[in-house]
Image 1 (cartoon, rainbow, N blue to C red):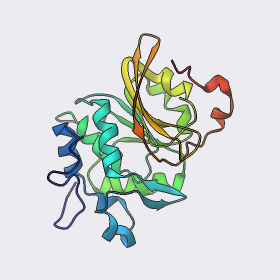
Image 2: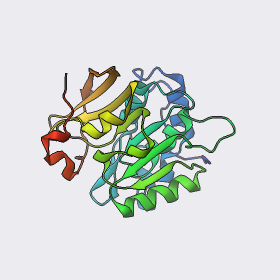
Image 3: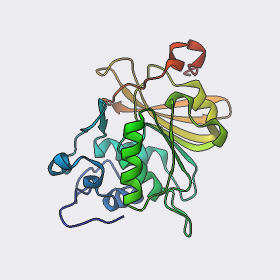
Image 4: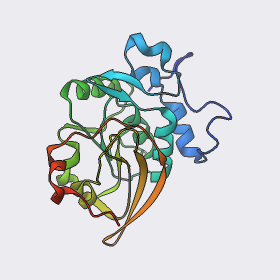
Length: 227
């Protein structure tokens, strides 16, 4: 990982007063967003806005990444499942927040990307910056069942319902953050806590994400009961 003068780093001083977690702020400042966008968009990487990364997908707005990560309250060694690796930017920040001394950065992060071309770009950018999370191409709604349970799950695409496989793979006492809504204009960011078999929902405000594409979600049996 190497930030150079002129790299797009967030948050800037006095920016985002709602992001109070000092570890989240430090991790974001350590990851240059410039390294995770196409060369022709690097001049725009300093904008607190989503940017296209190809295949109809985007790199998320840094402020929203910060809000999601703060909600998860990640600690070193936490085992995290990320759905929607995309550019790899949020994966890099996750890797820093869960880093364990003496282990590769990202050793407890498991990231799933649906699109092979994006997965390759994300993996290349992550490795170039010194990160080594576990990466897979696959259906994000299916998660990574053989590596469950996960302390935390973060989903970077919106679904009309909470995917049951992801809920099942979340450890008891764990946290999941994801955008929920069937249209881009009615999405809401949810923080879920798993208390026994109970789903506790905290609503964190409106957001706009690309949809979570999965044939699994066509079947209501793969919708977790929201209660």
